[in-house]
Image (cartoon, rainbow, N blue to C red):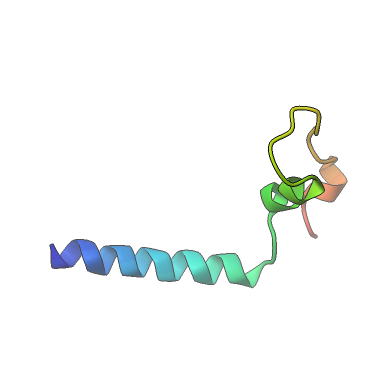
Amino acid sequence: MLHKAVYAFATGAVADALAARGGPGPGQRHAAVRPGRHSDVGPLARRDAYGR
């Protein structure tokens, strides 16, 4: 059982480090267009999807 706790902690730490380094990804930017679930919000334009 200890190995599962160690694995969960390490996975969470790596995920947090990766999420913090690059800012919001394309999915988070798309979700910020309109909060909530809406069927009429289309995908982001390709030029807006990536922060490069």
